[in-house]
Length: 212
Image: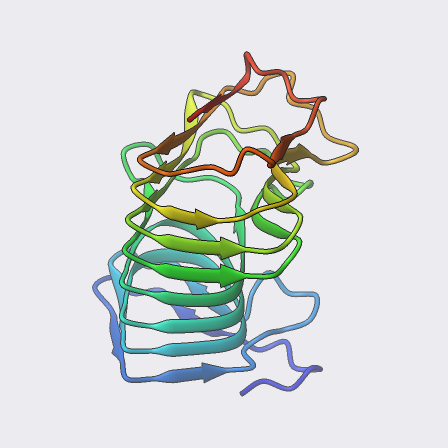
């Protein structure tokens, strides 16, 4: 556990690291980029619980784990059979040929933004974010909030998912941001989208292409 005044963090820098049957509780560091930093490739979490944590640079696999009130900034990784509750996703970038995949996950979020592409101080060159066979319940305002510009034919894919969202925006643009150089596809394949959901009228449909 970390106190509110602590700036310490848990760092995992080695490759092929496995953490199992562990609990991470109140792991956050105010004014820090993240309290749990996973930098090494092929980091695997099995049967772990994350509550009130800020996790950045997740690179690896999380299986059969539960997350609650967690901020994650995935750079790449594979998340399988996860339970995520009130999780904020801040996606800065991902490597080409190394997508961020959530497979067969149950995700519940009442926060304003489910996915934030950014944040504002960063540029997002390329991203490949995929949700496969997931159940997603989002009662906040925006499914996707663009703070910075994804380009290079980026994609956000919802494939064979159950999306429980009845109001708000599919995609919204941050008030001080521009998508002038954007190139991103938002695809809903085998996923029903409520017809009442909105698209920000400032978003250029030739640059942010939504496919149902």
